[in-house]
Length: 217
Picture 1 (tube, rainbow, N blue to C red):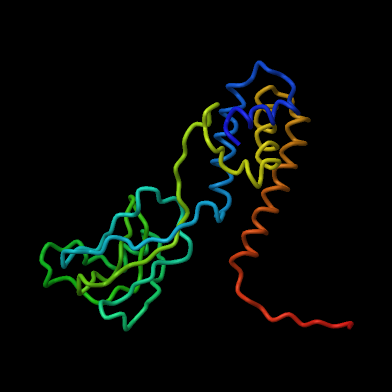
Picture 2 (cartoon, rainbow, N blue to C red):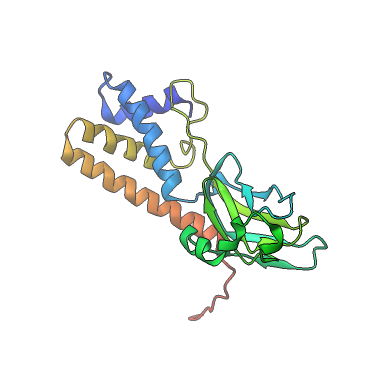
């Protein structure tokens, strides 16, 4: 749906025609909420993060559309002979474990193949400081590209497969703004139920293959 079509879809339930601005604002907010709450297939991507090109450096910039990391960072050596999944650390733990990375003299820094990583300030920090500039780093993540929904938005995210859930969330937000809390609570529950279904569908898509035992034939 384009923005104006989704507005009409909401108004078929909401009925009032004096809250179009509030409906568009609520739509923007609910789309953002869905994308933060769920790592949906609609916004998943994979990337090769720019390699570290200077010996002694230990950070790489995250993609500009980065939202949330899925899984860990995978490092591949230059010959492709080793694939290593790096362990995720908090920034504080990373600082304590790799305190020598900030030394100005490279000879004083312990370098090796990276084992760990932390995300901080829009960067991936790896440790130990890499002993080579030829390692490649791969990540999976959700993208973030929030834009205000308006009449000409084409398409409105989630309005194809999940329009009922999106509408329920919008109505919950708009009714809350009108202090119609009973109506808001009703639509909030509808929204939460819909989000749970989206989550289940996406988990089914990415789940490991499992053997199924049949009985009762």
